[in-house]
Length: 180
Image (cartoon, rainbow, N blue to C red; front, side, top):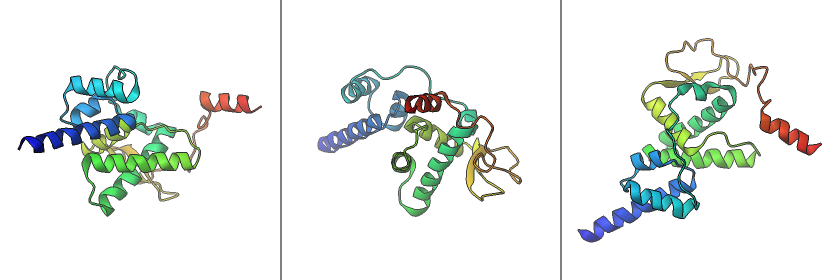
C-alpha cells in the first residue's frame, strides 16, 4: 500500500513539473494536483529557476473576447473540442494536449503565443460554467468564443470583420521598426 502512495505522489510531482514547464501558475497547480503548496513552491523554483509569479488568476471573460485573444482562444477551443470528441482524454489531460497542439500550431506559423496554459485552463472552466460559448460566424462558418448570453444568430467573427486597430500592437510596431 505504501509503495502505491509513493508512486501516486511521484506521478503528481511529475505532472506538476510538466505543467510548470508549460507555464502553469501556482493556483492551477494547487487545483489540479494533490501536491502541497510548499512542495509546489520548491518544485517551481527547481523547474523554472525563479519563484512563481504572484497575484490572482485572470477572472474576466472579457479578455477572451478582444480581437487577438479571441482568435487564439477560438483556435485552442477547436483543439480542445477535438480532443474531447475524438480521444479518451478528459479534464486536465485534454487541456494539456490541446494546449500543446496550440503551441505547435503557433510556432509552425511563426505567430506570437497569446494564450498561456493558465488562460487556456481558465477558458475551459468558463465554458464549463456556461459563461462562454462558441458562436458560428455567418460569413465563414468558423466557431469563435463569445459570451454565453449573447445573441449569435448574425454573429460575425473578427477575421471576417477585422477591427480597425487589429494587429497594430506595440510589439508589431517594434518588429517593423527593427526590420527597417
